[in-house]
Image (cartoon, rainbow, N blue to C red; front, side, top):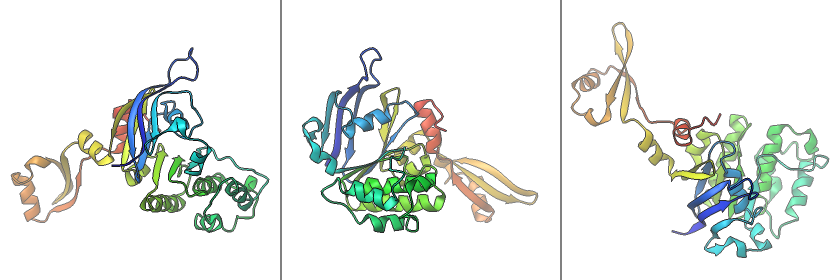
Amino acid sequence: MEYAFEINQLSFAYSPKRGNVLHDISLKIPKGSIFGLLGPSGAGKSTTQKILIKLLNDYQGDVRFFGQSLNELGQAYYERIGVGFEMPVHFNKLSGYENMKFFASLYQRHIDFEKLMIRVGLGNAMHQQVGQYSKGMKMRLNFVKALLNDGDVLFLDEPTNGLDPANARILKDIILEEKAKGKTIIITTHLMGDVEELCDEVAFIANGKLLEASNPKALKLKYGVREIKVEYQEKEGLKQHVFPMEKLASDAFFQQLIQEDRIVTMHSQETSLDKIFILITGEDHA
């Protein structure tokens, strides 16, 4: 398997007096995957991301980008990555189109950003000053900026935060399309619904330490309860019963409900990623 990033024993301190904010983090991010970097505020996610996009260089450990040491990469590295920061940075007195035209000029190649602006719902506001944009519009413009140079790796920080479901759906569809092109996408978010829908693998970081890395399905199996909750019809109304999954075939009551066609709903009791987040990190991410 080819990896976009291979991180080995990564540690970092902003100053010796403060001590390390990252402690011996090791993980691999497969090429062509959507990877979720998760954890509570102040956990070390942003610091890790800043190292990966070469905003911070004085770290301990080894970071490799497609097999090459990150420290050995020069300005050409920025042609290969796209970054969407959580707090959009734009020129408020320029229009959305003028902003994208300027940022596109910083790269050797760029996409048809006008087409993408229209797709994310900014077509009518393309020539409007960004200072007049709503927060959601700025977030969508920020997303377009991250894709401007058609990079091999995309860093997206809270890409759908604050968006209505329709606009969030558009961005998530585009993210999945970028993955289908072979792009590697690293997402930091507190929206576990996005994680479950988009991410192939996730890593949980808290207090600067890597706590667990796996895929969402494996985590739900590991932390979930193998039970099925059945809602069934009785003369006096609806009732519920929980059955262990291992004994369904031999459970006489369950078989009776099936044969008599009394089951109204049936749900597995898998643990949500929200609960897994709290179980692993010990914190509520809300």
